[in-house]
Image (cartoon, rainbow, N blue to C red; front, side, top):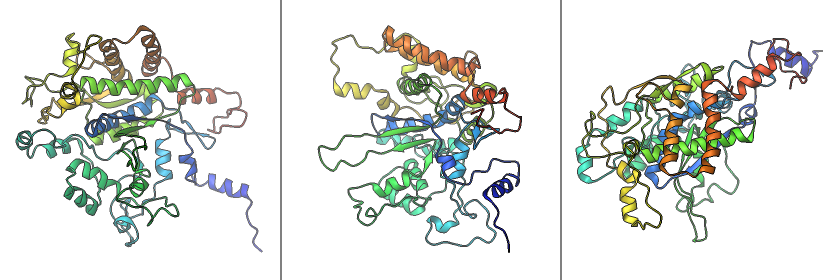
Length: 455
């Protein structure tokens, strides 16, 4: 008679398979905490623009907030949670992963289970959605004919599998190519969750539950969120939103508040100064891989754009008169109105950065205009040379531009001081702090095991 192995014997056998931390349930990933922030935009264009810019920041902010060095009671050789969650919900078939040997079609699955999918459903974005959109007047669209997709593809340099039927449906409905590609990319996945009474009973003409079933189980580093339908006048008015999803939970409320305020202010800086953070998505993916590394915040380098200000007269590719808010503030030309000044609504709309951006010339793709380089976290945050001002000095410039009151400025300065010290290595990340605490504990045996006494 064969004896059934005990649970301890099974556990020991599993641990002896190979030198790894074995996590065999989705909860090991989805049980992780994080710090996510959703921004409501002025309009659809602004939400798409912020989606692209924040996608570039996602790996940077993840490295800056790294706080996951321990997994299942073991010290890991990574500092962040992202890859763990990505693997825990990766439901691709062997064929979708690129292994074609013995693969068979499964008609009940999206793409019959054999369409090549290059990423888990929890991963970085695969396509920008603003750059290349056909905005502006008919004459401008004609003058840019053929250029918009070339500029878009300059940054969208990784494969983007799409559901062709969804893409054609969107294009026939008048949705532009960039956004159609994004939505059609979501539909290469199958829904994970179906609620009883919410399948055939859902009216797709007035409800978006079926779309949200797909949208909410495509967990990307940023998420573009269309407004939910308003079925009666008393429903809340929720606009076009962008969700920033990569930051890790911190050990204290002060740290969480600091990073929340920082990313909010950074969006205001990007929109007010009309900055451009675009780098090729292949480099964003590379940054995300680097961000997982041990002490990436203090020792790593990340691809980042060298020149963030938009094109102006004299720049290669400039074709339409346009002076950015960045230039105005740099030259001391504040747009702040005196108290009591009445601004016409139409004047406000036409003068907004969002309105001006619709008529901003597309970059021609010259080497200088689209240049990027490797920077340390300190350089990204505090500046490099005489060509890159750094994100924190830009936030201070914005606070000065809006005449921020002294009490608010004092608190924000405390937050920015924390982030500056974190970026320069003067303060360590929570991941580094936890790792150092464990390794220096008297009960630690140098075997990566975090005992109850250490915890």
